[in-house]
Image (cartoon, rainbow, N blue to C red; front, side):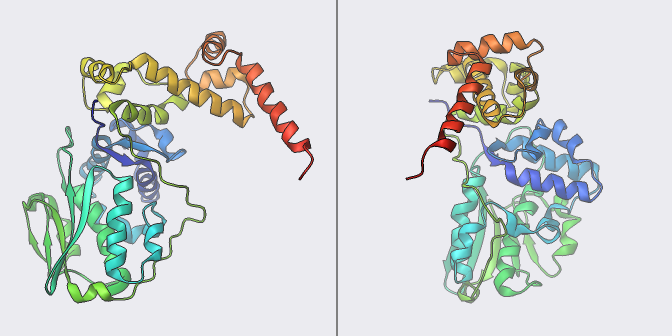
Length: 341
């Protein structure tokens, strides 16, 4: 079975885009350049290709003069709103909170691995990439983005000004020229095998109280386990504005059309079958929501002729979209009128 591509939760990208907008940076322009649908801002669920996310961050960093912006993310935004934070609220000590983050963060960013290593009086809070991201020129924005959250978590117990004595990073010193001003007195080792923050082991027992600021946090989506699942997540962010072509989908996934077809065939799927599954899934969801005509739903899905959409829906559901919506409304009326037990 074909392996899934490296993915990152879409929620962080949506929040990052909002933060950029508030700083006067046209985030939508960089989203499109990186192959990310602007729809992610309205629907920040599911996952995005890792290479697209880091190309987005790299593009902003290079062209907007914000080489240290990623290091400021936790300070400029409310990091407690992130989807991986709620499990940390049950931790009583810094050590327990770090270990909780090592599990919860990877659910949203399955292309990395986090860990806490303790040996005697020394401890290292580390992050390692477990997948190569082709087409991405630099690692430093990703490292600084991750470091901002690692420092924010430690400071929740050690104080807002805490800095490590030592820091290990994977990227070369040239990528950290602007960011090092925010790390005074920190001894940084470049070109290492991972990103690591040195912590005195005694700090791990400090009490910590972290309150997640997501009033009704939805359960995190399950990371895709196959290549076709990765493609489905990509399509879900593009379909509301019209599905991408096979060529664009292959480009977003960092592969060729030929390889895309081959990897789907290994799973008994095809571009057409996966695309139609997602078109139908989206159509059903929109018809169940109500508020839009059949013609409007057809247009949202990229059909220039509503009759083609009606034919497509009937082939999958056995009824027309209009009849399906009537059945949904009838079922709701029956449920409302049913006598309470």
